[in-house]
Length: 166
Length: 259
Image (cartoon, rainbow over all chains, first blue to last red):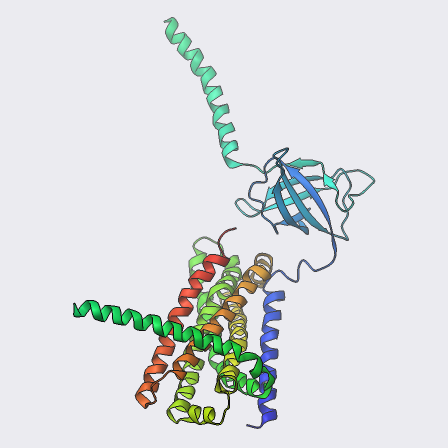
């Protein structure tokens, strides 16, 4: 095999490997969907962020418009501060609300932004003031059991009182 | 008492050879810049190690992709979750099977050929002759092969994963009838480039270093007889495979711990 022939084959091999990497990144992973367009940063405070993670999506009307960049605990107000980067081409009014929702029944959690009605839009570095925390299953179950017990208790107390009276 | 003595002797032998291997590896790394200056040698080695492994890597990748798609389909159809087939095949390949299986094949195909070549050079006293002529064998013979192996391994692992995904696509969408749109879109939504593909590439680089270094060391230290060379090639495959599987566990625990 001539030297030129070998070099050509090696070049083809490396090109093939790089093409495979590009295929894997674009077609088989999420590099292509959230492009490297510049974004602007906003933050929001939640009482409970649930299972939200860094790099979770930020969606509005179901369409992904950004990513969560960091989540920290504010040690003064004990709220979770979620910083997210939104696509520069999508602007939200200043009174938009942010909720932590779950995709599907038991899927990943994401931040859903519902637009408000203000004329001015959120600027870079702004804070979303209307927030709704994630639903915590245990609290929900606790509430349900408590309300059931209260209902049964008022009936049972009545029945017990009746019984005592007898 | 003899048993205790031989146990101590064996332990010291193991430690001594571990130390010897570490020094060998350090010399190899030190000789790498000099080898990069003789780039044509490196190119020749990439051809011998990488190009000639393409056939087996691509064929195995496709076969693993076919089989993964089939088996995962049978498992998922009971839960009605067949749309996640693409995602599961992709994650299995890109995170684990791509780097590990490609490394095992690489150790078997390229590792043994490296060991045999260096071992035969040593048996035929070519290494000694070169050293007599004040040619640095580490940078002229060993380092180009090391660079060739470290460069080829990630490329081969990537190609394994890519061909595996395409093979899974053929079986899942064209043969079984899973929805093509779901196959790709769920995969694109859930597979992260840096966390999954990137970590897989890092793993394959580490495996490349391990397999190539072990192969070169075994070849360099072989006994200068045909039997010695045969023994050395066996040790190459066994030690590389065990090291790859062990490092895979460590790397997976480090990279994919839920954090």
